[in-house]
Amino acid sequence: MAKPKIQYECSACGHLSAKWLGLCPACGEWHTFEEKFTEKKSSSKKHKVDISNTESPDAVALSEVKQSKEERTSTNLVEFDRVLGGGVVDGSFLLLGGDPGIGKSTLMLQVAKERSDLKILYIAGEESASQIKQRAGRIGMSGENLLIYNNTDVRNVIDQARKIKPDILVVDSIQTVFSSELSSLPGSVQQIRECSAMFQQLAKKEGITTLMIGHVTKEGDIAGPRILEHMVDTVLHFEGDQSQLHRLLRGVKNRFGPANEVGVFEMRDTGLHEVINPSDLFLAEMNSDISGNCVTCIMEGSRPILIEIQALVTPSNYSTPQRTASGFDQRRLSLLIAVLEKRAAMGFAGQDVYLNVAGGLKINDTAADLAVVAALASSLKDTPIRDKSLYIGEVGLGGEVRRVPFLKQRLSEAEKMGFKNAVLPVSDTAGTFNMKLNPADHLMKALK
Ligand code: TYD
Ligand code: MG
Image (cartoon, rainbow, N blue to C red; front, side, top):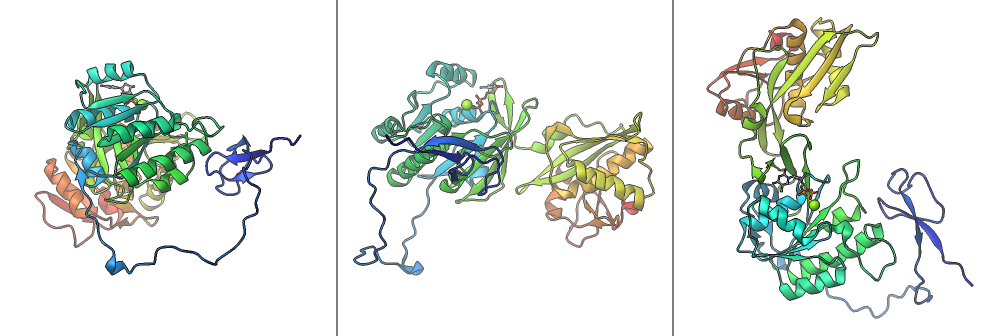
């Protein structure tokens, strides 16, 4: 009797190998290979190369292609619509990823609450209908328009969707849906690939807007095959610190609108609330009488957000002083300390340095460099920074203050929030504002 064939499959990219491997040669991930029994092929006929008699549609000139106008449905949540580019495109296929408990299911319920005129079919693979009802009670919705389906067999789901013809189909989550024709477990690469392909067809052929929720791995990628992200039209990430109230909805990929746009929400006990002015949220507890606090403006997509950077520099009790950063790249912090030591003659040897971005936000924008440097200098000298001052600029290794994009938008956000001073790179694009602008080309000048 022939033994069943065992193969090993990478759970990240689906690469197959006859042997177990620690490192996937295709995607470079470690420890992702899982055992997989291959199903018997129904026919063992060899695939023959034959190019005779192929009948297929002809290629069409681009100018002849009929353009279908994309219709959008608003979610009535301004922050959600902003990320989507003005509402969800009808018949599109979306993926919403995020850590467990961040609020993905709540967001979906809230769309159903806001658009009570839309029929929404909700495939509940993670929670029972009564749990969902309980949550709906918390956010204050009755939910006549929301149909809950507690079955995760993909065939049944698709039959239901065809029968009900919902305006939006929500699959919560893709990792719980399975096809009974496959032997692998729900959540495996094969299952996810197969089921998503079926939902994709449903979206494209029947025009049903389909929104899949996906889990996120430790590294922050959407669990399952990479191919999932290629299949969908839009990938959204819901992120935030569980210990903090705010949540960011980020558009990672968007075939129908801007990518990298950000929507801001706040998780309260009555569900998610939109934050129309995030600067207000992040500066709420700002105290400018304390040394080491400095405000900068970062860009999230096309949105300027004012945030507070806090530094604490204290004499160290260790032979190797500590450098700790939260919300900011640790290596960049070391670099900026080195620049301060060399170019501004400040001594951080024997000093512990702690840096914190208030509100639990993570920043990647180099425009925050100057504020980090100012906060460090302020804490080292124990002198508070003047009230209502904004610091923007990238700091180079020579101590020069470099230009940053979107200077105008950043400054007008600060003006709106009542800032009176701004230290910024020398630039002719700054414009005129109702505050004092202090252009600086070098660190030494900026820190004066
Ligand atoms: P949930 O939407 O279940 O997260 P996900 O689907 O991403 O796993 O969100 C659950 C969390 O949100 C849970 O920790 C409780 C919290 N929450 C509130 O704080 N307020 C609320 O009104 C609701 C509905 C949930
Ligand atoms: Mg959930």
